Image (cartoon, rainbow, N blue to C red; front, top):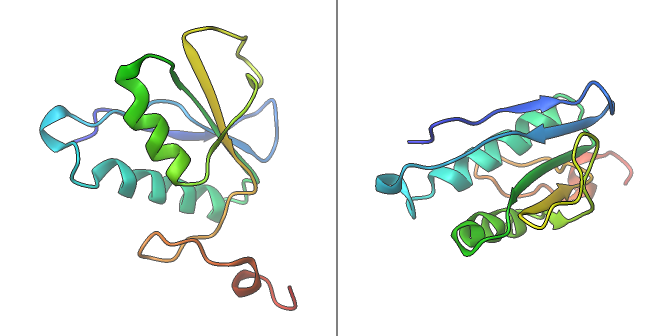
Length: 117
């Protein structure tokens, strides 16, 4: 199971949350554990009113599955955010706005979330 994961609001940038650390144990990879956790973190970020959710991950091939997972969930690469500097070993990704998700992890369309949208 994942060793650590946490999402926290950034005190230095209101409305911006950060996924600090997430890693799935080798025995549990490719079972949807990480995807379920990311979906849960995104849903929680939305419920807490965050408008942006970011993370830092590695550039090495070892991190390619993580980058693909985040990209598949709508995260896009971005410049380093508050507290980080450009680093050739880091990839920075962000999701903005933070979408609402239904219990199955599917994004709820904006027109379904906001009356009159």
